[in-house]
Each structure stands twice: as C-alpha cells, then as structure tokens.
Image (cartoon, rainbow, N blue to C red; front, side):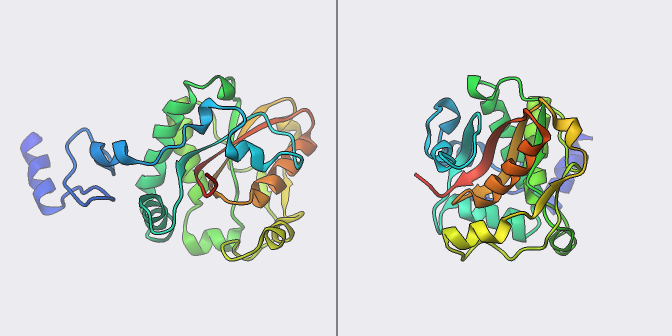
Length: 229
C-alpha cells in the first residue's frame, strides 16, 4: 500500500496551497512551515480584543475572536480566495481544525453547546456549491468535538455581496434577513456563531439578534480572519 501511495503521489502530487511545495505524509493542505508563518491573532486569549470591540454597544456577546489577520494581497487573502472561489474546501476545514484546537485552550470559549455557521441564501449556495462558513465550522466541530447545526438559522432574503459596501450599507443590506426555524431548540444554549471574514460585523450582528430571540441564548463568535488590527 505504501508503494501504491507513493506512485499515486508521483502522478498527483499533494501540494501546499501557499508555497506549492510537496506535502509530507502527515501534512494536510498546508505545509508545516506555512502553518507556522500564518499571521495568527491570538485574540481568543484576550477578552477585549479588536473583534470583540466591534460589537460593543451593538449586541451582547460572550466572546469574539478571529484566527488570522487579513491583509490585501497577503497570504490569508490568497487562502480565502482559493477556498471560496476555487472550491478548495480542504483549506477551510483545516483552518477550522487548527483554530478549534486553539479555542479549546481558551477559557473564553469553554462549554460551547453548539456551533452555527452564518448561512447563505439558497441561490448563492446553489451557485457556489457550498457554504464556506459551514466548512470552517465543520473543522471547528471536528477538533472541538461539538455538534454543528446548519439547519436552524437560515437566510430568508437574498442580499447583495457586502464586499464593496460602506458600514451603513452593510448593516442595511442584512437587516431582518435571518430567521430561526426552531428557536425553542436554542433556548439557554451557548452558541458559537461562525463566519469566514469579519470587517464591520454587520452580518454577524444580524445573526446574533436573530439567535437571541430564542431566549437566554449566549452567543460567542469566531471567524477565519478579520480586517481589524
């Protein structure tokens, strides 16, 4: 079997998505050196970090964090572009697994009952073929051994992309577009809400407001990356 694997590896080399070098047997998607070079934030170790501050005075949350710093034309932007638009779902799953191990070491993210990814509208889901937030969330769920729910929270209104919108436009674009199918299932739960990139927090804020209509729901949030420093 080892020789067969080596032969297949010669025909279809398993390459790092960042540097393009061959991966060793124990490596997945990214080589160990590139993982070491990832611009981690360590926000999960500090309560009043820049991501947490985004939501001050807007919605109550327990904790907030992002795995990586996002910079234009940087390593993280390249990874997320490959993940979202080139269909390389293994990137999102690996980043979720890696961050899940980190979150488990933080007291801020203890006793999470459920992981919920920010949902896509069915039209965008059909077009892209997958929800990038759900892939990242599945990696988190895998390493943290926590159940993931992709059915309860849904996006009922199709909205335009947030990429080039101002802060006010982003908020108006997502206002009142999420709903819960079974709010009773979330009552008194500690939920980890997951997205890919946080900029103004408008989308996550709308999700949090919807989740909290279930009653006594404690929400924490995390993302792959953030644009705040």
